Length: 80
Image 1: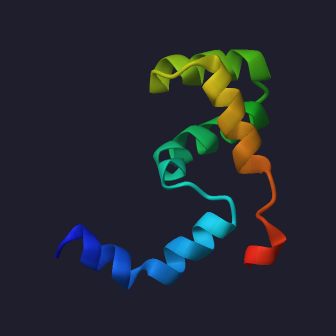
Image 2: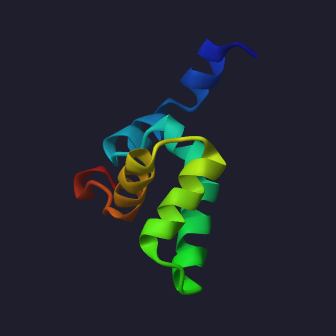
Image 3: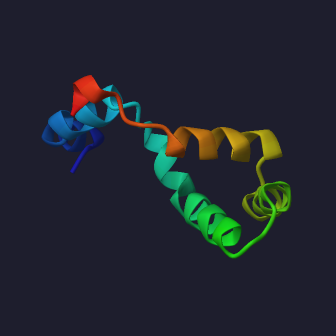
């Protein structure tokens, strides 16, 4: 199957995701967000959690904060 065929087959889903504010690269950080929520729920400080996850996922702390904010935001209501 080619990239074009996959895109064509999933066009509606991809369009809904895009309109909802979801980017394809967001899927790369699902584990990061799950770990963030678990660590904070376990009582870890947010700054420690962010530093730990930035090191573990090899990204900047600013990127971790940005991802957390993005994942906590509501979807675009007109897209659903």
